Length: 376
Image (cartoon, rainbow, N blue to C red):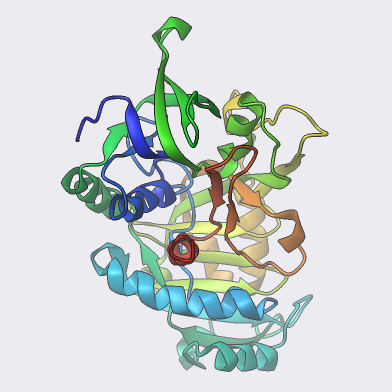
């Protein structure tokens, strides 16, 4: 990596997919760009611990705007990161006839409106579902990404671009610098004494910390962003032969997904009711934010509950073989909890001039971030 000393034109705090992608984008504008990441490698948190779904828009029948943006970003993502995308499996969406927020006909209409390919599933697939609980089953166009391949590709792009990378490094605080339009970021190597801290200066600072956003703002004595966090369990499973080359999502209400998780050669298994174990709000009135690193150990798995409910709709789910659970905090914007929309959050000059906070809910949101940056 390039070494520009301690002075940069742009500093990105967070070395996940959004942070690294943003740094590469900013490198086209600035000569001296830095990325700060507390983990020992890139893309180790939310970028890795998720469903690995490249959204094709089908997930959001209650938010037309999100569906349209997902469809466009799906095309951009699968084209640009084609070497990191697994498109080898068949994907099926099944609409529940019980407690669903949409009917099969409404789902078909939604897909037509956003331009998402949809066709009736083959008869052998339809017959695998419980006809008493499932109204319709469709074959769709939806893929998965391999987070390890994505990390390796972005790491090479960072090296080629000359972006400075600080791994195993905590960002302690962001403050105003001594010069106009200068910000300071205090950093500390993991495990180091406070006296080992250093200060990087930059003209612009971007936080791409997802669930850790308010932690840095709180430590910097800056206003917290009203957010809702969920502590989530993603189960990794070995699929039965029926699902070995396929993925399934049942929606919209009784909502679960079983789909390929390419970086491990397994399938992920999530459930709208049981994947979130508990949640909390973050804002200035509540005080210091809590989160992932405050937990001593994960709670007891809810895999058995997920499996029991999923098997009601898809009896063959009983043949899944549990491997392990992976845990992470999921960040939600409170205003979008009702319609399930997933826009980016982009707060400019948050508390300090040229401090910009970015939160993306889906990996393909990165193109919305780039678009917002180009508009400045």
